[in-house]
Every structure is written in C-alpha cells, then in structure tokens.
Length: 192
Image 1: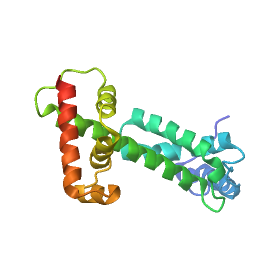
Image 2: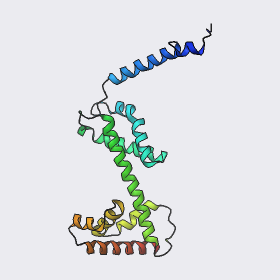
Image 3: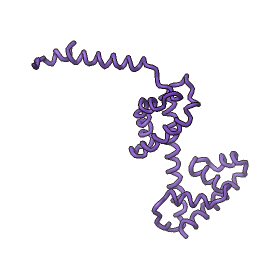
Image 4: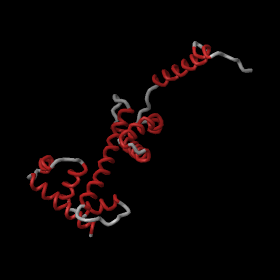
C-alpha cells in the first residue's frame, strides 16, 4: 500500500531526513574504519582508492584513456613499493603522489617526442612514420650516451644549458654544441 506524503513531510524529518541520517551514519562508520594497509592487503587498497587516484591523474593528463593507463601504472609502482609505505602517512596521499608523478612523467615524455620530432623535421619534411614513439626511441638510441643525456635533460626535463652544464660538469658551450650535433644527427636520420 502506497502512503501519500507531502513534500514537506519528506524533507522535514520525514523520509529525506532519515535517508540523510543513514548516509551520515554510514559515512561515520566508514570514516572510523581503519584504512587498509598497502603492505598487508593491496587489493583492498586498490578498491578503496582507485577512483580518487584516477580523478587526480585525469586532472593532470585530461585524456580519460591515458588517465586509466597512468593510474594502472601508478598502482603497479605502488604495489612494488608497498614495503616502503610509511604507516604514519595517508594511503590516499601516498598513492596520489605516485600517480601524479607518473602522469607528469608521461606528459614530459609526450612533450619530448613532439619537440624532438619538430626539431628533426625543421631541416625538411620528415618521412611519415607510423610509430612516433618508435622513431624517437630509434633516434635517441643512435646517439652517444653523452649526447643522449643532453637531449633528454633539455627536452624531457626542460633544463637550460647552464643547468645541464652544472649537472654534467661541462662548460655551457659544450652542452650547446652536443645538443646541436645531436639534433643534426637526429634530423638526418629522421629525414634520410
């Protein structure tokens, strides 16, 4: 049998009020429950925090598919590092830190790919390539480790010549020269 109630009954101490109380009580119970420890029950940690971590990553990368990939990779990294989790910290903060760092790393890698391809195509139209990542890997692999370090530090990490020189213990002119030679070599390889 249906009982007819007015809107006032539903909002003033009626069904809506009891529903809010139930949600409020359930939230209090969940809030009082101890967080799952990633060192003991990682599956529970994953279930409890996946959506929050995904939303944090999604805010950084803006692409839902990439956000899912990055979130999964972040949980894999967290799983591998679970023994290093400090129990005094919040699990959610720890996971979000790992995930956001992974997202930023991915964004930097994408930026490096774009920058290197732009730099290599300035000398002429680069041949069409199906796999941009594969081309970049090939171009970087063809460089000496010293030249590769300068390219990666400059394009991936965004360091200026002066900062790279200080890191590698080189004169600033040597850094500029290595970068110039590396880009020339990469252009030739990409367009040849």
